[in-house]
Length: 126
Image 1: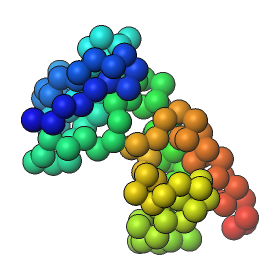
Image 2: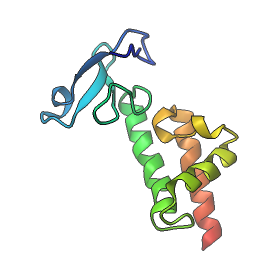
Image 3: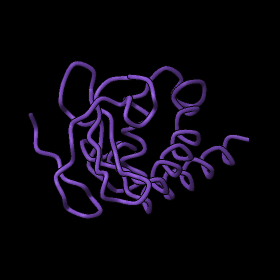
């Protein structure tokens, strides 16, 4: 099993079933019970590889906002059906390497930046 550490307190995260959080199993997660409201992240199906970094309640909310701003660009907007192209564009906008550009890896500042970039892009399209 992979060693994953909490981005907030530095403790090693537990590899547990998501039922601990949701009351129903949606697969495995890495969980830090030491942080207020818990910090956790899901894993790629059938692996122990995290989908990103552990997120506390604030970051989880910001990730939802970032996805709500970004996903329409590749689902129905400018990059319709081309998620990889949309992430390549986002990496350029953010000045990050493509391999480091994924909302699952972002902290609060970067999630807020995604929202801002995507709102600016949508306003240019109108």
